[in-house]
Length: 101
Image (cartoon, rainbow, N blue to C red; front, side, top):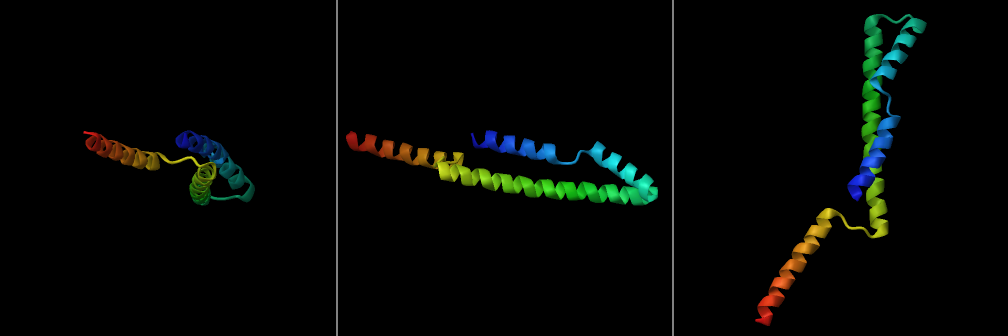
């Protein structure tokens, strides 16, 4: 369930990110308006892409933290916590069976 919510949030965040095509169109328009050289345009595009990538990483991290907090508030355990508890229960059942015999 955690993965489904996380993927849903990340998909939404990805939709907010600037696509490669849109970034290239923006740079072309700016090149024309500001009389930028090809090299300057490429530098601007690279900077825009890096900024978008950095922002997306930050947004993903924030989204993951918020999902974890929501799960904690709801009392939902993680898969790791569930597996740890399952192992403990299995071990206790095994001890109980040996005591019964």
